[in-house]
Image (cartoon, rainbow, N blue to C red):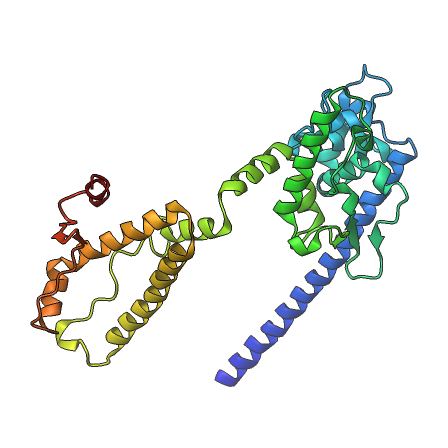
Length: 355
């Protein structure tokens, strides 16, 4: 009976794995096909077969496509799902010679495909001067890859490079370069600076993810400002100290070892020892970082940390432990001009500043 069950389970595993592989193969193919769809839609735009004016309303003729992406003063517009959806219904579907009426109802899957492609098509139109030659797909990879041209991220030196007609050239150039630098820092690695970046339609750092960030200029800029004062070290330590989810913030006690089991090398003893060893490494690292940094902020923190430890050494818990180690009377409180200062009752910084 068990042999039959094992064979049945194995057969199901093999069948399921084959299904997984089939889906993966189709996904790779779909990734490439989506890029071809985007390229073809871009070609329809370049051939004048995409009614861009309908994006702005039927009464507008000869509308400049760049007005989709830029305000009158040259600043970038924020584009979100509703804007991509409007582009699908007013520009993409008509360019395919399809009837807009009930299209979403009659062709829901096709509508979904166009919705997924729309941000990339709009990105190509926004950067048509860079992509108009059409050599931005790598057909040698599986799936096909798209080239995010470095020119899109490279700093500009004049408003003429933006192909826009505005009056505040200097401010426009400044804002554009802030956006480009912020976008690069938010999406790319430092080692990728100055290089074209090849990526798939979807996936890790895929084209769709990049394009959606590209059309959120205010968010990108605000994140850059935030990153200017929030280092990666700060972010990671803050995450550790989070009172709801942080590994330190949610920890209120280390492993408790029953008094009768202490020092016997049991599992609880070893677990506590492991915790202490790693936390000692962390504590020593913090002290070292504070000590070698010459800024008054870190030196103040170093002494504050020292005073905090002194208070802990005066606790009943530590005093009872120390009695088991020595009968010596040890004074941990700081000496100021040969006078003992009680850190538990006074403000040390205020006290020494008056001397």
